[in-house]
Amino acid sequence: MAYTQDDLSAVQAAVIALATGKRAVRVVLTSGKTIEYDTAGLDDLKTLRAEIQAELNAAAGKRRFFRTVTSKGL
View 1 (cartoon, one colour):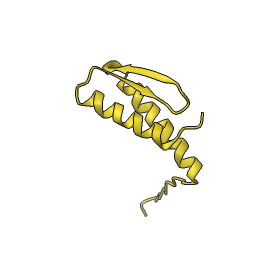
View 2: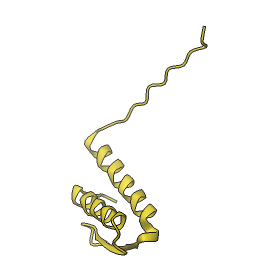
View 3: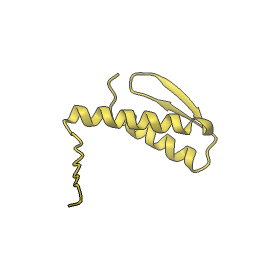
């Protein structure tokens, strides 16, 4: 699914609303899909936020690199 920056903003606002005490939120994505979350669905909403962010980063050509340095301790 192609997400937009507006989708990320809507999901981020919903995460903040749930984290600050709102009991339920409704997220409307640009594709027309409407999703409702309650406080129990906060983890699912955070997962959706990470998925959208990863897709937007991939579309923008951003890559993450992890540099691992090891040593035998000699």
